[in-house]
Image 1 (cartoon, rainbow, N blue to C red):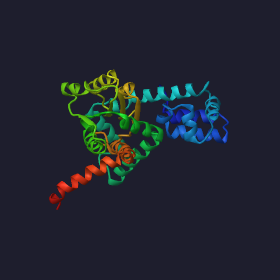
Image 2 (tube, one colour):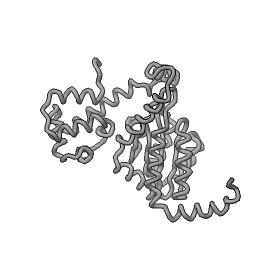
Image 3 (tube, rainbow, N blue to C red):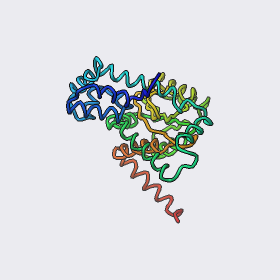
Image 4 (cartoon, rainbow, N blue to C red):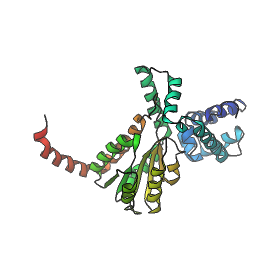
Length: 291
């Protein structure tokens, strides 16, 4: 395709040709700033986020040349798919390193590194609504057992999330093997359980296999990933996205850790009695070990 087909640029071009009301300008600004979230939201959700009425969203879509909001949302999603299939996430690790070096330079300063990570966190916070966070947390709270899985670059995030979650709920099974051992563990899931997956490109069939297994057993599947286009998203009941931009060959986990920690903060007030009993006993047994 010719030209820059990024969502924000396509929408901006359409806006130039339209006469918008004040409410419609607010909608345009929201969609341009949050294409990932807009691409998976209802018109009512977009209206709430932009601070306008539901009918304003439909009128905005028509004002910039779409039959309705559904067509606008589908166009956003399709363009995101197009970018994903052509982007850095499809490269080998060596190609990714070279692409990032070409983009950010061979020597990244502390200031540039901070700018990248600030972008990751701010963008991630904007991409996920409070309703999605609450839904994700409630799935965990209502599950008999929460199975947690994430491998390779997500390993550290999963380890920390599982550790804190085990203190809060005590109903955790961490999947530590993505092959046969993990399958054996995931086979224990039931419709009363949930399975939380952490996954970022490049995506692996082994992760998708485990997600499909949990889904086939009736477990609720929750996903924290770098894109709503992740293959695991098709299995998920709730998806939270986190930016993983990095200047090297590996994905950044800064924003993914932030998402995980925010979920733990949401869960803590619901688990205070268990938490207090746990830490009081632990403090009693470990006080002689402290320096």
